[in-house]
Structure formats: C-alpha cells, structure tokens
Length: 312
Image 1 (cartoon, rainbow, N blue to C red):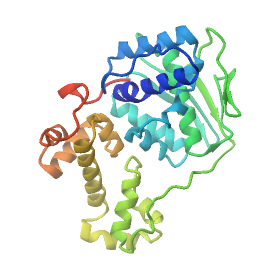
Image 2: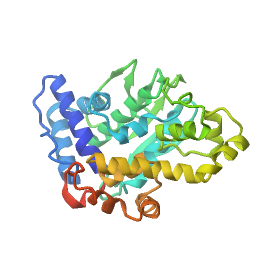
Image 3: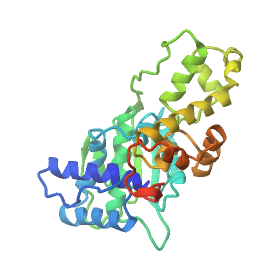
C-alpha cells in the first residue's frame, strides 16, 4: 500500500492544500513508491503546519483524481461491512505495517482501531489520513447519514462536515455509524448479451476484488445455480472462468499501466502476492514480472525493477 499512499494519497493531500489556498508542504510524488519514513515525514509536516483537518478531508479529493484500480476495487464494495473486509484484505496483501482492526461490527455501526507494532504505532497524521479515506469510501458506497466519533468521543464527522479533533486527543480508535445503506446504481452489464457465459464474464470483470461464489454469480445473472453451472461447462466451470478473467485483467494492467504488482494483484482479486504469482504463471507460463518485462512498449514503471508493492 506504500505505492497507493505515494501515488494517490500524496497527490490528494496536495489537492486539498491547493483547494484551501495553503502552501504545498508535500512535494509531488516522483514515482510509484515512497519510503515509509519519507511518507510519514511529509504527513507530519502537513499536520504540524495546518493541523489534522486537511488530512481528514483527503479521502474526498481522491475521487477527483485520475482513476486508480485500487480505489475502484474498494468503491465497488456491496456494503460497509464488505468495505472493511476489502480494506483488511488489502492490508494483508500489502503486508501493511499498520492495520485497521475492526473491534465491533453490526448493520449500522463499526468500531475500529488503527494499530501498529508497539515500536512503530501510526502517527496521528496517518490516523487522520486513513480515517478520512474510510469516511469518503463509506459515503461513496451509499452509507447514509454517516457519523464518526473518536470512540467514545468527540464527533469528527457529521452532516457531511469534518471537525478537527482536540489537540493531543488520541485519534486511532473510531466509531463509524450510519442510518442505512443505499447502494449506488452501477452498470454491471447484466443485459449486455443473451450468452450467459458472456454475461457472467462481464459481471466478474466489474468487481474482481469481490469474494465471488457460484451462488453470488447465479443471483446476479438471475438464474439458478444449476443452470449457471451447466452453461459454464464450456468455459471449464465457475472456478476456471473466474481464474481466466482475473488473469486476463491482470495481463491487461501489466502491459498498459505503470501500477505496481501489488496494486494489480489486489485489484484483480488474488488473495496475496504468492497466489497472484502462482496462478498467473500457471495460466501464462510467466510470472507477472516476467510477463510485464516481455512487453517493452508497456508504460515505464516508476520506481524501477523492484516496483512490487510495500508497506503503508
């Protein structure tokens, strides 16, 4: 997720500062990767200069930046609990040094804590940044009347407005609440074809980060599980089709984008980096890195040959 933080969030921080007419404490990212300590220092400089409020607002600026497959995968969450599940998978995928740990979850509330190793806990600036991104994502996926308190108090977000936490207040434990969830209308491509296999492929492609099951897919294409399984036999079955769609999308991103292998693997729904490497090699006879190197006309990768993925 360090790639995510430098290429997307750092750009979003600069965007927020510019909107507020503040000096750009954060320089433009020079590549897809940024050392952890450099990122922490930049965020701390923003907090020292302007407080935590600009960092809380960064999440809303992300949507105004160029599309990013990682953000798209998170914004495709079916509901708030799915969103936190995806975030957790992303952190595991990236071997994140800091984690958002859900302490309680129900239909209208999540209590979570941003934690790290005792020797390297998140800085308040990092807490504020991640909190702001999660709030923006909750709104994006249709959570209504979102309210966030620094468990147990004070309120830092209500009625669409951020409030800076009191100076020195611990801000790593959060209580998210929402009144209801109204998922946004998405173009899933359900009616793009009378060919059931083609429709299934389109649906899988629209949200590869989802934990798909054959029952989920059958419900989406509005047929019985038995009918779907019968129709997918020519494609080798549900598991084979899902694997093929993931590999196809990963191959496309590897050769047409500069995103790191970690971002591509997560966005395409692989469980972790070894799963990505193993499954992609089984289908293409090349590792993801070798596949990308085989296409010299692909966009250059900022960060050089070791542009894999690293810690937030």
